[in-house]
Length: 368
View 1 (cartoon, one colour):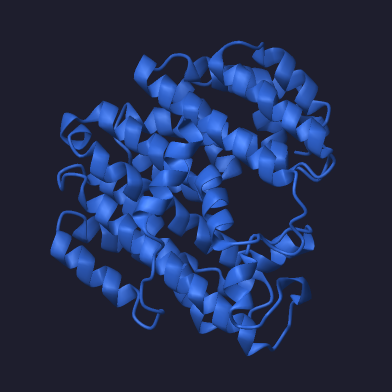
View 2 (cartoon, helix red, strand yellow; view 1 turned 90 degrees about the vertical axis):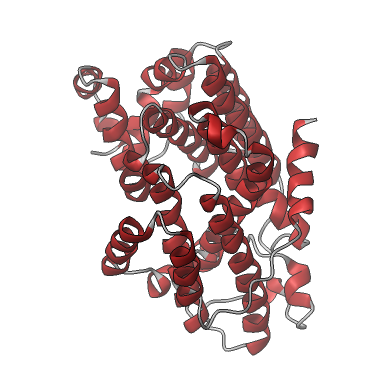
């Protein structure tokens, strides 16, 4: 299917599906990883999180559309915030944004944008508390991502603090949203909310930093670099000189500093996961699968720091299957999970996260 082949017939076929099957179909098209992990969640969390991911994917589609000028991206972000909040017509948004999508946008995302009204109908069917969690996540993400798109990113971000801010907008807010949904589902988890919220931001940063490191060269081809200049300048390397197939140990030194920071955030991700009661195996598996795959990706990056394309550090399907099986066997044993985390991280630079307080301050400043 290409963009032009999203027909009224195909949309009617989707409309005939139940809400559960409709969201599962869309997830499978836009993210095979989340199509695997989200169904592990218990109901009603499963459907809320599936919908939340689709909303975030729509924001990503706006930001990734190469044919859109920055001012138009900001406008569509603002309109989509209003759609999610129920103050703008989702049909008008879907019509107008679909007309601006190019062939470079994947077919599954063309399809997602055409069915925005049905996605929003599902959003508005949730409880007031879950709906508020999704709405605030989308508003923060869309506003923050638009701010970063207004910058010249070809030479990297200025500081690690800016990288933290970017990771918060694209992933930390998702961690907060998930925590709010988990708290709405479980009174036991709700009692641990204050401890879990800052850890959720760190969890999101660990996953996003891993993606940034894996996708360095893909992003650079698009004219964007999400690495912080201050980390590399400590090693006398300037990111505006960065090119694939380099052989510069100074860049590798900076890369390993970031691997250490990401490793620390993933350690916080395990702390977060273990605050979920052991008998909530679906919630734990959802977190553990993402965490396990991120640690294995960091290992591949660390073992091959001179890689020049993402495929060279992509984990294998066998590694994914091993992560799934191991999680299912061990998800209720906290001591064993700590042992496995340390085993998986063997050989990585020692965990060195940014202070949790700093990450929490990013969240607080954004919501004031």
